[in-house]
Amino acid sequence: MKLLHLDSSVLGPHSVSRQVSAAVVDRLRQSTPGLEVGYRDLTLTPLAHLTGSHLAAGQGAAVDASLQADVAAGQAMLDEFLAADIVVIGAPMYNFTIPSQLKAWIDRILVAGKTFKYDAQGVHGLAGNKRVIVAISRGGYYGPGTPAALGEHLETYLRWVFGFIGIRNPEFISADGIQVGPEHREKAVAGALRAASDLHAA
Image (cartoon, rainbow, N blue to C red; front, side, top):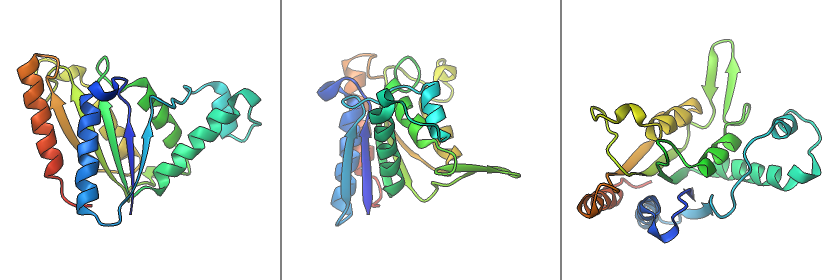
């Protein structure tokens, strides 16, 4: 069984989402003998954002020399995703949504004919055989019923993205309120780490 671990926080060792995603991977590694884990830090090897040339290349046009390395990297990330049985993602909220590095990765895995397809009945996800666990961190409180709920475009976006490609029940572990104050941060991190340790085996 293969697990793909992705981090997208720019904060390195100071990141809460990285801490929690690592705890998720540790839990699954301990509970799943023989688990093969691959890791990618999306901030160390960031993909370029999509351009018209990228889209043309995806339609079969010749790849411009300046894009060849980036297109190859994007293909490698798609292949990693397709090969994984479990995907664990560290995703902090930046300005109410996901980091741009994570968005660039998503743009490379949402590929018609690979992870979804259209037919007369509509769209069909092709990646529904995966387990996805997302460790999210948010500076404030954005849960249902909170005053800021309408500004939440991290978990809601990722739920839609993964549902679109057939993953109907992505799992989320959330550390909320980490910028409210030290006590709130400590409580949020402890709760998220506890949730990671309670995850069921792969």
